[in-house]
Image 1 (cartoon, rainbow, N blue to C red):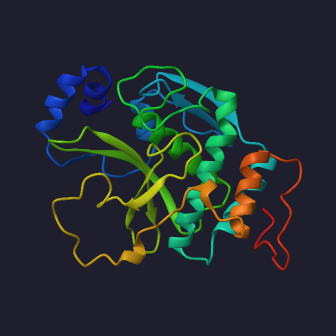
Image 2 (image 1 turned 135 degrees about the vertical axis):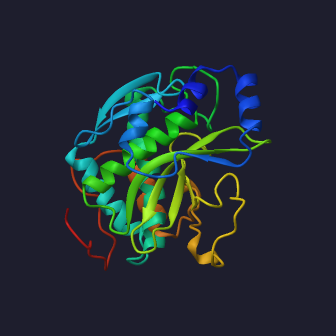
Image 3 (image 1 turned 45 degrees about the horizontal axis):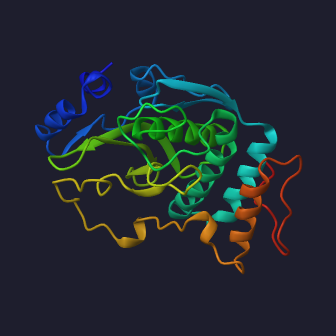
Length: 265
C-alpha cells in the first residue's frame, strides 16, 4: 500500500487537507495496471462478470454482484446504439451510458441505489466517496473490456489529484489505444445512475501545470448529456430510458426500424 493510501484512509480531514496543501497540483498513481489499486484498498478485482461493489468510504464495505449473460447482451446493444461512429470519441460516449446503466443495475442489490454525488469522509453505508466511485467504475470498465466491448480504449489504474484549494480526488482512467491519451472517467459527479464525466486526465479536476505538447482540439473532449434528459423524439434516448427503466431482460431490447446491430455478442 502506498504512503498516500495510508494517509487517505487514516488521517483526519484537517490533517489530510494540510497534507494536500503541501502537494499542490500533485498527481498520484499515474497510470499502470489497475490491479495495484485494488490491492491498496483491499478490494477484489472483477472475476469474470462478478464485481465487488465498494461503498461506505474507501471500500470499507464491499458487495459482490454478477452481471448475467442478458446484462452483457443489453450492454452490447446499448453501446452499439450510443456510438454514432466507430471512433474513440464515440466509444467514450458509449462508455458513459454503459456505466450509468451498470450503476442502476447494481444499485438495488448492493444498497447503493440512493448514492448521492461523491461524498468524502462519510462512512454511511450505501454512500460512495471518490475512492469507491473510482474503484467501481474501474470494475465496470474491466467487465466491458473483458467482454470485448471496448475497441478503442484500455483500462488503467485510477489516480488522483490534489491542490492547495482542492481535496485529493480519484477517478477511473482509460487510455486511448491509437493516441495513448489518458481520460478520466469520473462517476462521482452525480447520483447513482448518472452519466460519468469523461475528460482528458490532464484537464480533469485540476489542470496540469505543464501545458500539453500540442494544442488539444475541443473535439477530443467527450460531451455527454444526462441519460434522462434525452428528448422524447431521440431514438437513442428512448432506448436508453427503456433499458434503464426495465432493467435486465430475458431478451434483447427491440431493435429500431432500419437498424442492424453490428455484432451479436
